[in-house]
Length: 507
Image 1 (cartoon, one colour):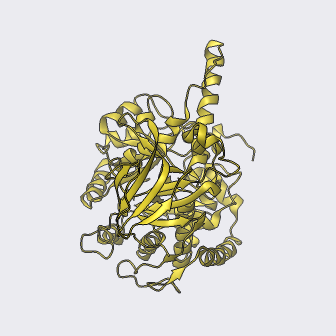
Image 2 (cartoon, helix red, strand yellow):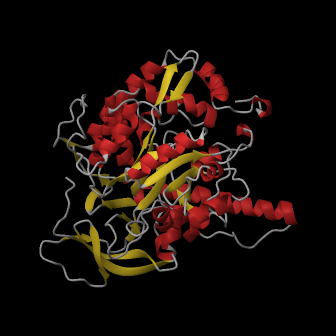
Image 3 (cartoon, helix red, strand yellow):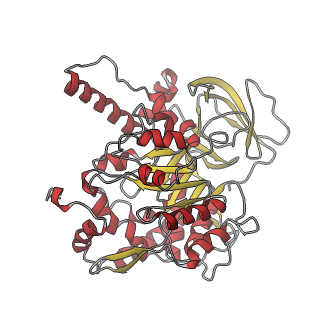
């Protein structure tokens, strides 16, 4: 069972991937002492305080827990069904299927997705939680996050209500009084959730197209609730008539600030990066999504790098493994550079133009900075939270590579099976390559409906969780059978105000 090691953990003799002040990774052989949820000492040959658990890390890599700046964790039951979808087909078959989810579906989808993140070595996630169908849904999601052990920024989202499937019609509910009242109650100082430190308040606002005054009032209320991150999907291009970017819209309303995180930020307009830099805002690139949808990722472009982070987005069409996102982005950037050199100058190069350390930092130190946690997570450093991944190096994929270049070994060679141990907030959540059992936390807030079979203190193994998830998936799939998806996708083109005149008619 995962328990907080109040008397401490000593990670003995590993290779620590430590960052210097210039964000360069300087591997060093050292012990790491953890007390409570904090790294208190990094040095060679540390003595073992009484009562301290010692974990042998000789020959292993001690890596900062990965920071994922954008994901919809609830979508686990949808995994496998979007392998060939772009944005418009995904919207009705993925995003809008939230309307079919019960509270049980929400809990098991969120819990299994959060546990998948931990299994992959991700310790911090900004969860753009677009599953909100009523006041009990955010409470259910928060309980799942708390139970999983993941560190998360819960980005509460306005409900997206489907009023008709055939034909497809939906609306974002931003006016019902319960929407903001529920959010403020969840994170009030005297609430059941309170300020536990591991789950922070965030907010997701996608409906930014409208008059200035109501939007300004909304952001004022969001910020007054102590919100850590306000995130917005941002994409454009010919599909959306090359319209104004989210950066431009928020700037025009006077709403850009250091708490703003724009997800994707593809097809930026001239001047966007200057607006973001001046405001202290950030962007999150999700390479698997952007490349599948034909939207070039921006995080490794010179202008955007210092403002950027890395995310997973929808694990319904790919792995949550952050090094997988790193290598996709890295090789895209290298290929894109070579293509530009050839096309623009008729040249070729002996170098790749981008090294592995840059993309590694996007998923660790820079990613933490982008979500306002650069002084707490994303690095193995004294005084930082004890969020760490211990990579095995004697596996078929990691052997030899880890000795030559530990960062390259993680970015280009590793897989989930190489993640031997994961520690989040000073608690061992995965050990010996297996997720440890979890314990259900108390219900959040004054829920009118509880998730059946999830009493406070009940223990669950991963096998228990996946069994409940598959039951949920079967129920959701049954609900989907009567929907005309081809018609829904066609309706989505107009509901998203896409440009039909530039649409290539293929599948």
